[in-house]
Image (cartoon, rainbow, N blue to C red; front, side, top):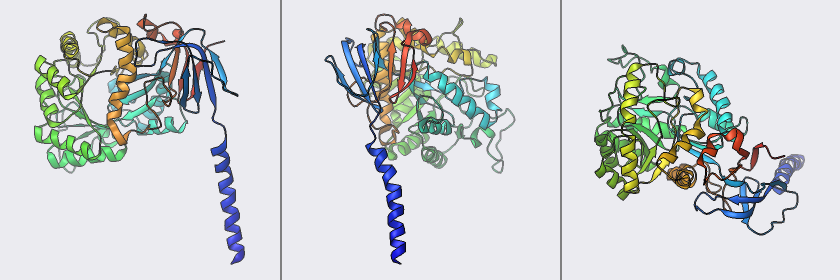
Length: 447
């Protein structure tokens, strides 16, 4: 058997040598020189700075000269270097086709289209998204593998909904439900899961986490695109809500809720939810409570009318949408008054022309916030929200949303100063000279 031992030793060497060579291979370097750095946290830029990227992380940020032999050098020419943008409320699978087409689409075709549009999103400067509903696992996997281009994705996977909740997209004649009837298509492919009663919501929540979700998205109140849940309803009973939150806690992550009415928000905060999506009808006492408990408000700067207003195929949805937007001004005022932790998201749905305006929606924050507040919200603040996923966080090599040593090299080089002119982010094709994600350059318009 001596020959067998010799053969195994040779095979082990053959396997080990390429691995060792890969480990010892120098990591690619990029050196940005002559840039003014917005670090995602401080309003004052670091002037006349140099930033060294090694591999997928930021190696050094300095106002002194950085020696980096073999690095690709990009002379920023006094442009602003800032963190990649983060959209805290995105739907990778639902932003590009009308709802009627999505509901009946082939799942394979939907994934291919979603991957294509994710590449377009990356070129808008959004290097990370929190996906709050839909089976995005395949797209995320192929992006992380480098097969397709796109942002980092924190997936919620299928949102969990009660019968007649915001995630119940079954047809008008699909209830009463026959227990022997298979799941409808939207549930079968994992875009949504309908669950009622404590045992069932516990099971479905565990399934959602088993699929690879970084957080659970629960439907806590009435929504716009669904037709069978008026805006005023509170969805789930307290015991069901607490069961969903308790399951998330056992996995050391959190629950974010779709909710608009004050009653729904209060009940789910009492149950332990840590993030409120939309929340257009927040009242003063609830805003104060959210600030005291450190609950996040994930807001979307929507408009009721004009070229940037959402369009819906159903007049029921249109009426709901207009009713929601009427509460936005008050919600912003209250959350600012009590300094509620606020995240920026877009929730751009079922319209490719609207999705292409993602940066323009970020620029709309100037109506209520300074450019610095808006940019901090879309970088380091959003990254703080994402970090609530704890050990479920799929990106743990370094922090996101900041320009500092050890952080992920997700960077944008802006032609101008967005801290003075927030509208620069509205036209990334013109104003973003370089876009880098994970240390890889996806756009370089500097000659």
